[in-house]
Image 1 (cartoon, helix red, strand yellow):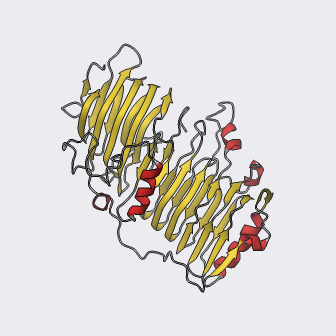
Image 2: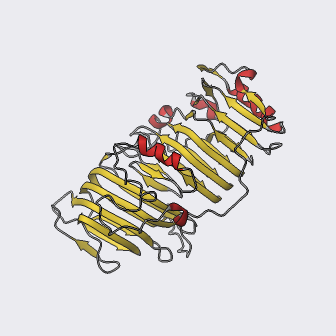
Image 3: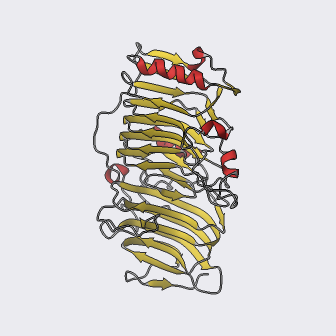
Length: 424
């Protein structure tokens, strides 16, 4: 994460250091209302896909951000039935010896409960309202039929790193399990403190090694993951790898300010996925000091789908190298990545009331795809000055930008050029 404030990753690797709420009108309005109530410090128009005007009362931006059913399309698929029939077998981990005292190793109880539930015709595997300390577990399929996992309590990872000697990449992993619902309102706690303090990003003298992902879904089809808190991931919090037909909603993902590389949600080689109503990272009023990146959205070339209806507001930055950045040419390789025609579309992003200083000449950089330009990008009340005596610049390629109020620096009128202004 960032040095001072959370920096998590959501939806096709998007870095979000501030409060973010993304959702779709495909879900019930009650869910949206719940988050509006919880984020009461925001004005009611902080959610552009639900309210169709910007909160200054003008019509300049009206209609630019449409309801998410229009901008976040998901191909239809056979959804897993989220209802549980009366004939479903209830399989509680407590019935297999789980203590749930937060100290006892309950791993075996979870493994035995999974074996029974997976082999049942229809089952609900339940972790009641207790705290279960568990080692790495691979919940393997295929299972006999549809399965629901209800996490009502808290699952907390073992704090002994030697427990991860056989598989240092995963803590909880659902492998080749289709027609699965994971829900319950409980919490999954990666107990990442021991991993963070031994990370090479925290202590440069230590070797760089991968830490486990807290919750992984791999090679699975027809998934629903919802109504859960995932916190203090050892590294990545949630990952979907080689999955198909996935609905993710109502997740709360949090980690403390100095936790390194604790990304929110990773999506890799997965088709037909919808991520909605998820709260990731800090709430309103983030402050960043000396970080490499401030508000960053990054996507690899060659992807598909969209990342939309995202809002960043009330953020203060000091000596940040890349204060505002959209990078659709992200390439984390020594050899440059080959330019491709397809890309994840980035649109309907609002930046409001962002102030501070940039450590580099370019305070705002929108480097968007030639094939899928960034659309509906709005800057409102932006004041980013250079940390030194230079004038901050904006570089904007393949992007449609609207500005409201005082915005400095401004995007240039011509692609590929810089635009400067004297910040107040």
